[in-house]
Length: 162
View 1: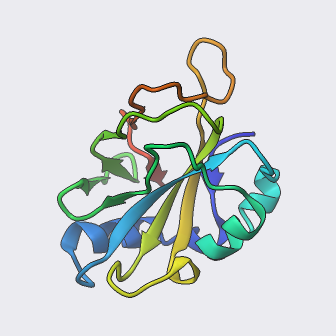
View 2 (view 1 turned 135 degrees about the horizontal axis):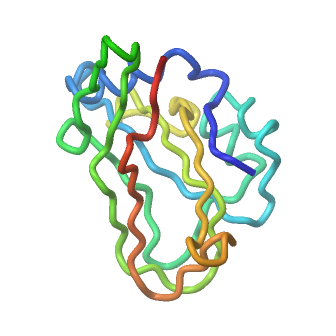
């Protein structure tokens, strides 16, 4: 298991992030979705899905009490940082903290997805962009929420395009 990009989104990560940052189209957002360890497919299989609906048809979304998808609009993203010297673009999000999450599913993957219109779309309209392992920093195992909050953080950016 590792972190990676969905094939459908490769080369579009900066555009999706910029769309949300610029609120264009209106109501575009990044959606954070957590997959549980139950039924999780390999990264090679996961990366081939083209919609969130396709991902969830064969993978289980976390259903712990207190869990909810996080919707990140233009106020939660940071403008892309272009480094012309290094030839990179870094995409950053503000830290995202969940409410208290009760015991239940163990969490394996965090997905960042792109929704071009949060007012009318369904999971079939949401494009999966990136996936990240969710691991306990001490044990390296998938985390098992037990009543506390969970913070998702990307101190060096969640994507660096080069």
